[in-house]
Length: 83
Image 1 (cartoon, rainbow, N blue to C red):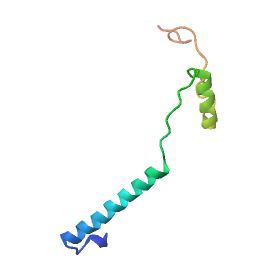
Image 2 (tube, one colour; image 1 turned 135 degrees about the horizontal axis):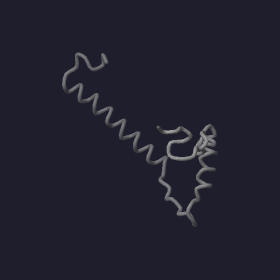
Image 3 (cartoon, rainbow, N blue to C red; image 1 turned 135 degrees about the vertical axis):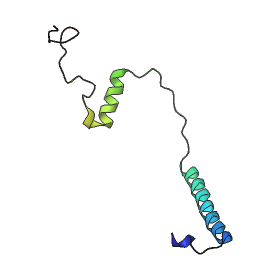
Image 4 (tube, rainbow, N blue to C red; image 1 turned 180 degrees about the vertical axis):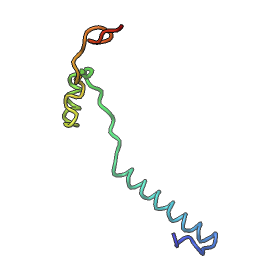
């Protein structure tokens, strides 16, 4: 931060302008490197099983996360009796 101390207003403006030019140059370079791809619409909608399979491939540590860990109990209150 010492670069900003003991500077005149004009010197600070020159430093800021240098950063602005560098940012604009970097944005232009990034824009030239990455061209946006138009999405291709699928012929049919993706099924839930296909979506789960895709997620399982991308995130293997989450395999089976959609399944319940606890067995279902009967009734509203489960196996407990209400007095």
